[in-house]
Image (tube, rainbow, N blue to C red; front, side, top):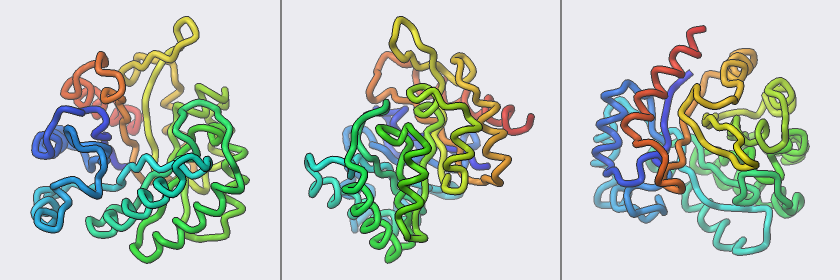
Length: 266
C-alpha cells in the first residue's frame, strides 16, 4: 500500500513546505484539500495555466492521487454549484494525473439524511464525465453512507465502470457502529482510496487523537484491506484546518508514517 497525508492537516503551509515534508518523511503522495488560504483547487495559482507544468515538475517522485472536492450530491441545496465544482475538479485531476476526485452525499461526517435517487443520477453523470479525463469520482463513507450497506446498494445501482468508494475508516465505525468486517463485506469491492484517522468518544463528543492513541481498530482495518488485495493509499486525514488546537502537522505526519509502516508490516 501507499502512504499519504491530506493537506487538511497543514493549513498554514505553502506547497513547497508540503512537498518538502512529504519527501523528507518518505511519503508516496499528497492529497490536495486546501493549500494555505486557497481551498478551491481549480483556481489555485499553482494549478493555473501559467504554473501547472512547474507544479508537476516540483512533485518529483511524489503523486497527487486525489483532489478532494467539497461537492455534495444528495441534497438539492446548492446542487448546481456542487456539480460544477465536481466537474471542474475532475477536469483538473485529468490535467495533473490524479486518478480520483472525492465527492460526498452530504457534508456531515455522521449519519445524515440524503436523497438517494438524486445522488444516483448525479453520480452517474460524474462517472461519465470522469471517463473523458481518466478520473474516477469516489463517494466517501460519510453522511447516509456511513451505512455501508446503503452505500453498497447505491454503488450496485450506478451501472458505470468508472466508480469507487473512498473508505473513511472512522465514519462507519464511529457513527454507524459497524465492525470492520461488516464494512469490508459490504463495500470491499468498491474501495479505491482510504482515509485513516483515530479518535475516542468523551462525554458524547468525538475527540481526535494521533494514530494509536484512539480506540479505532486500525490493525483490523489494515488486515481487511490486505484481505481484498487493496494496494492503494492509506492516507492520514488530520483535520487541523477545522480544529486548530490539534497537534502540529510536522509532529503528526512523522508519527503517522512510522505508525502506519509498523501496522503494514505486522
